Length: 469
Image (cartoon, rainbow, N blue to C red; front, side, top):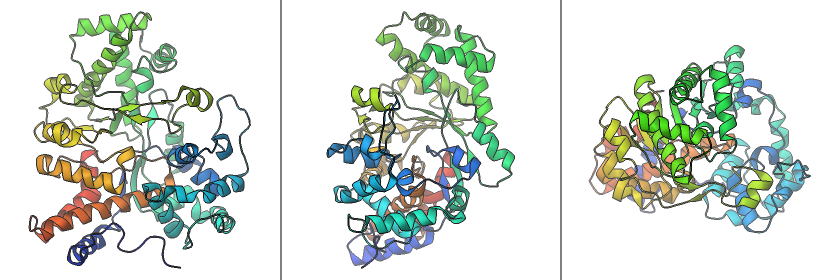
């Protein structure tokens, strides 16, 4: 049986170009991983406890996996996904694993298949394809390894050659696990990022109560506009004390606004009283992106905008299982008009860094690359989420490079909750970029020395610079 992951994975079919890609990749494949944005749990690094059984680690928390299985008729309960009301779900890890293995063929051609095969081979040393026939043997082998000290979170952090990883916490989080990491004396670098959606989006569940809690935490009067802004400043400072270099905003759209202070205060008062209509809610979210950008000018946090997802598209699944259960769906997204108020206010500030992502690939060449190609404050985030894939990454480079260049992009970030997949995701990105650069060299559009310099930048340096790590 051959390797699950071929040495020439994702490299060009043309032999000459493939040789260039191999050479480029060999020079960057072992660079440290900089993971500037993601959703791994800081508790893992704080407690350094063994991971659960293979299903609990690799299947139950991974929406890329269970959304595909759900689309083929497998109930989330049968995959161990917890319900909000505590009603029973499958708890037998082996049974969950078998259901997954029996249907592993469903992932053919998907990035999930690449990441999972990479993890099986390079982390767990397994070389036989996963199937119903190999399910139990794979499960037993992985379970045995997870029980050893070499597969605890901190050991894997070192094995993966992670230089720094950023988790993402809500504005109301007490960051106790980051404090525990600090107090432990461990030298792994784990930083947080400020995610204030729950206290910025009036449509977020419990918004009014969240603002009350924000006021209690900070000692600020969050019933008033000025006090509310001060509360954000205090929380941002607290997050910065735990290494945060960025804020993150998952708004439905990229809309921004630049209201006069009195208008913004009146809008806030209306929303705080519960008198705001949907238009007010939309305008408030838009205004808060600009307010966050202004705060970034003061405190240096990089502003990340992740718009364009219709979150929790199925109300039935949302009601039963809660957020982030695979039902976030991309929507059409405007950037030229939407970002103009923010860019009018701060877009020509070279000290500001606003990193914009998209789920609407049609905007790459038409809107985002031209914007990032001229506004000093604006940078393009990498191919994201549904487009965090070989084809998505290739399209990103093809549609943005000629207008924005490479240096108005920010390298790669894995944006994952699936800790074991981090090396796979970074290696896929490095392979795709090396293949793209090899094509430019073969076409005599780049010198080979320039391609080597760019491969290093895309794999490592740009992320450190963009995220101020």
